[in-house]
Structure formats: structure tokens, C-alpha cells
Image 1 (cartoon, rainbow, N blue to C red):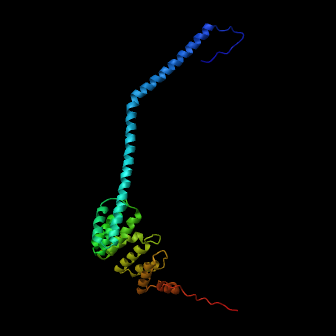
Image 2: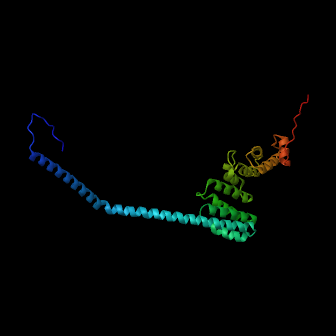
Image 3: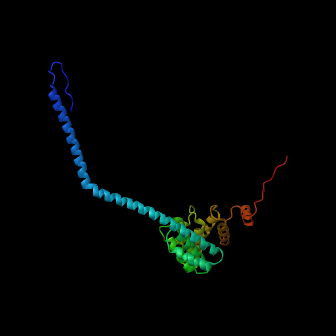
Length: 263
């Protein structure tokens, strides 16, 4: 309680009155403390059990997450080891045994399963089973959980594997969106689209695309050479620098045709 201001003109308060004020102040503090303890007790009675349950649930969930993470890492490590063993068998020429091990991995999920499916599709291509290869590639291409880059590669390989069995327009519809200059798949997808145009008797569209591919330095050299030759057969001039093209075909540096002036 606040002290009353002293005034010399007023009579001094008696000792009994001061003692009474002190006792009153102490009583108020004890009442406040009792009220606070009672509030804490009521809160504990009302919310103590739910809070304890919530704490146990959170701790159990955290422990479960740690266990799941450990198991997932262990599973990924096991898949990687099995994939390496299958690749070793494939390199050794034992494609049948490799295919069996890869089939088990391909039934799973994630990157290891996609890689296993890719390798199985390659084995099917070597056997001449384009239908099986295309089915495996299509499974990868349609898996929305995989990175877009892997799905795009699978799409191109699927179309390449079954090109002879596909309608030209279907080829264009599937890989046409990838046959654009700013795409990293421009060369492979563009070459497929150009051949599809030829199958549709669209020579002008095919020739223009072949010329563009042959002149794009971001396209792999092997594709540039093929598209340049095919464009020439169709009557389209895809050669801008004769010396550079000859050097490219022969693997030699172009000769320096500049004339040095001697005083």
C-alpha cells in the first residue's frame, strides 16, 4: 500500500494504526498468493492431462520420424549396392542375371527404381524387344514423382524405340514440345520431329528444322552432322562455312587462308 505523505501540521499516526496497516498489507499479499496458487492448481487440473498426452504424442512422433529416416537411409544404401552389382553383371555381359536383379529394383520407388527401369529398357532394346523397352520408358515418363529431366529423357527414348510403330503425328505430339532451341533436348527431339515431318511429306518443315539443328552449336556434333547431310539430300543448304564443315568432317583444323604481307 502507498505511504501517506507526511505533513508537520498533522498529528503523528499512532503506533497501533501503523501496525494495523502492515498487517492489512501482509494479509492482502497472502490473499493474492493464495489466489495465484489456486489458479495454477485449477489450470493443472483442467489442462494437465491433455498437455501430458500432447507431449507424449509429440515425442513419439519425433522418435518415429528418426526411425523412419534411419530406415529410409538404410534402404537407399541397400538399393544403391544392388544397383551397382547389377551394373557390374551387365558390364560383364551377363544381361539375363542383371535383368533379374534390376526387375526387383524397378518395382520400388525413387531414383534407384527409375535407373533400374532405364537399364532394363536398354537391355530390352539390345534384344530387339521395342515394345518392352517402350513400356518401361513410358512408365518412367509418366511418374510424376521423378525429376522432369529424367521423364523427358524417357519420353525421347520411348519414341525412339517405337518410332516405326507410331503415327508421325503422335511422334510430333510427344516430343515436339522438347524440340525447341532453348531445350537441352533440342537435338534429339528435333531430329525425331524432322523425320516425322518427312513421313508426313512436309519437306519444307523438315528441311527448315534440319538446317536449324545443323547450325546450332549447342546440339551434339553427331546430330549436327546427320541433320546437315539429310538437309543436303533434300536440297537444303545447311553449310555456312565450307572450311569449318570440312574440318569438322575430317577432324582437322581449318587451314589458314589469310595472306601474309611481306615488305
